[in-house]
Amino acid sequence: MRELFEYAVIRIVPRVERGEFVNVGVMLYCQRSRYLDLRCRLDEGRLGVLDPYLDPAVVVAHLAAFHAVCCGGEQAGPAGRLTAGERFRWLTAPRSTVVQTSPVHTGLTADPAAELDRLASLLVDPPGPPSAPDTTTPDRPRPSTGRAP
Image (cartoon, rainbow, N blue to C red):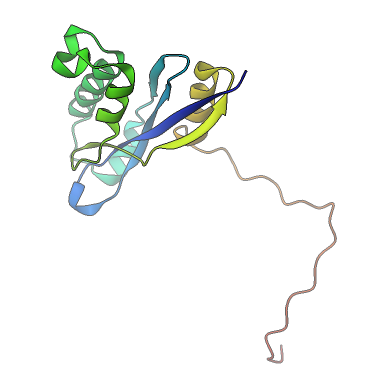
């Protein structure tokens, strides 16, 4: 049976005032399954393009704290004692920090863990090479611009 889930992309914003970011993870929450987890993949090369002076160790520490709250428990402090849904809402609340999330999106899945892996691959991993053009359809005439060639 497919169940409703919510997810947000985790972003690193090296210089908040510039608004530039790198997608580094995805967090997925499925209330019915009581599932809350995230996948993070930090590409230091991509991050260095936005800010060559940002210390990756600082980013890793921020992501570790984010992950601790996601997992819950005493090691995450007061936020770790919240329910999974409350932790998801707390982590996805808008903020002006180095670690931010996208707006929350929804979908349906029968397997939250597999869906999380799929989303991480789609939204976080570097894209593959572009697809070759489709040569099975004939060229379409270009619309006229009203000017002579």
